[in-house]
Length: 380
Image (cartoon, rainbow, N blue to C red; front, side, top):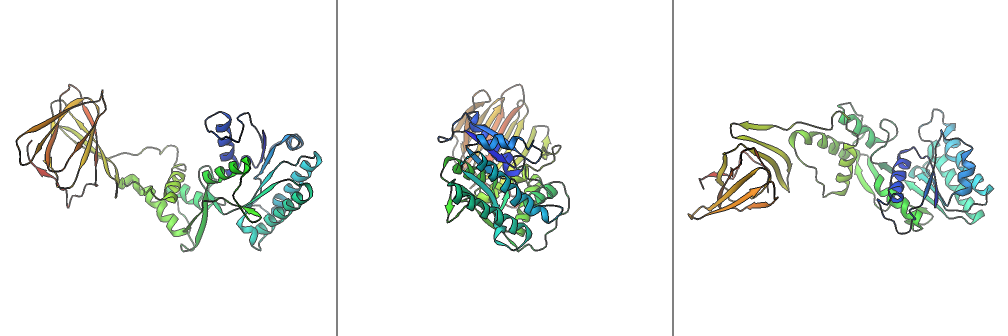
């Protein structure tokens, strides 16, 4: 299968090609797409002579090329209508009636230079289909967000992520403006569905089935909360699909020299205790380091429960129900990863039995609250 992609170096093009390469290399499975596919990548700097070869050999065309931020308004029509005409004429020249997908915009419904040019491209493609019998898939995309989108260009989400990650100012004229967005992975998934022959159609047009509607102000608040999470350690609410995708997008815009960030280590002669992640509904993860011979703990909880996982060194975790004398012992080691539950109502401690530091990953069902620690000293 030969696949021609115009606008191959653009935001959608790069993501689509990356996934097609995954299919080609067997890293992603698509039953209806052969792995011996060839991608013809065409962009503004490609030798124009190659367009003839690509149009002659293509089995499917993703027409993603377009103009959205020209220097002159006349370039809208030249880029969004003119090149579409050249592309279709070249396909017609070789009698190639393979399916053609067109990346249009919801602005095609608006009376502005960009929308008018996109609408003209749509109508040209529909007429081409009527004249040749070729299948055409016209997608009126709303705002698309995700990795590799150019910031400070024509994507508010990309600009906000890029600027906020760098402590640069952003401009929000009206935070109540309602945005309709689609995520790049959902776009690519839909385009591959079109390639397989089953696009998501609504009338004459196709669309990405998963859309998100959210205000500009809410988007900005979320992105600022992502930045602050490095200080407060709060994990975003990843049960919300949009938040999950926006957080992934934000991380892709971090400066390359700022991928890491420090944690506050509470250090004393016994070792250290460091909070790693917190969540309002999924608890807290911390890292505990104990020096050889050191015992930590000797306390119990009413409602707070924990899980201990020793990942390096060796030791013993002891339990005693607070109103009994019997002590239970669990020997733990980084050589055999084993989670130990810490039930409520049991005083407990952990002792390092080795001759090197013992490292324990600790999860608690709630973030630590100094006003209500639910922790009561009692030797095991």
